Image (tube, rainbow, N blue to C red):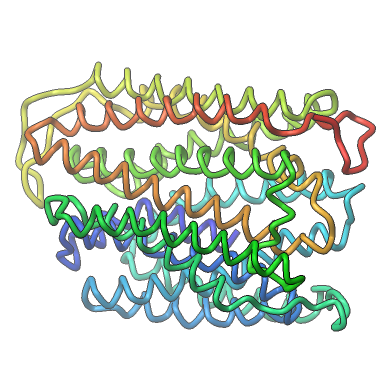
Length: 464
């Protein structure tokens, strides 16, 4: 919950941070995305390190790092200082978060994991609901720095609780070896792709930005070759290659990447439009945005009942519902656009017919889709994963979730700022971005047919 609270509160806090610290467009993107970038890059390493040094120990190490880096974010005086602190904070979270899913699966086993994840899911939704409200409240009545300061006492409470309750984990003689070269190759491949996506527009898509993206594909191919070589030599690879011979996991990886990319795109579009260009306060933006998690929480209970017959069908219904929500958001923004402007405290703002209530149906439907998806995806993706693959699998799922979010957030924010830079209104740019989200979700729905459809009597093996 603490990790998701921080991430969702930042969606509301980012515009206030930009105005206070005087960040450029590119720095604004890095403040929002830097955390997700290092989180995504290092999640695989975090999952693997949990296998090696113990999940409880790795969780506590990551939690300590998250505490220190939250303090560094709170005292940052320049955009560069905050970006560096956010990058480090994402790295600390990457050591902590993979252990959560792994310890649930390790403690409950394949047979009871579905029930455990069904309880785990609402906490994700609750934190998504509380994050925008918390961020808006803190910014309105205190300062954006409190978004980070509040992490410190929370971390200390969690640390003490974790010392008393978390299981010790697996036996030392089962520990795999860390593939350092594989970790470096994977991290470099991700960085070579995401950096030019974020910075490309500011540099007019110079040749070196395109060269970096091409290089990322080459480094990823080298990583795959390295992993295969280690597998043939019976050495531990950074990612268990056996995972990608399982249709359920490979298909699930694509679905997770695309779905959370669409979610992050939507979470970027909304605060940029209503706070930077319409002039809503962080509090109003946060309260209006809670229509989404309200729908998520309401749908999760219904989804668990429906999933007894066909969990994949419930997940697919969730994807389509969110696509409908994105399409409705595009129509709502377009129908309430205005060309007149007024003077705001930080510059010109656009008049609009947008209200918290005419946005509600789109956000609520999208939230219902998220709730139906959240309740099923972890169990479906991990349904065929063996215990020895668990750390690698959960690290990969979390990494793809965050990497999809980081890449999509970079792309969608670039699309919005690029369209506005070419003379389009913020409403036209946001409408286009929402339609792109809807299209991405349709592709996600098609990909979801690769997931297994686990019957009610399954104990973890499921049927395709």
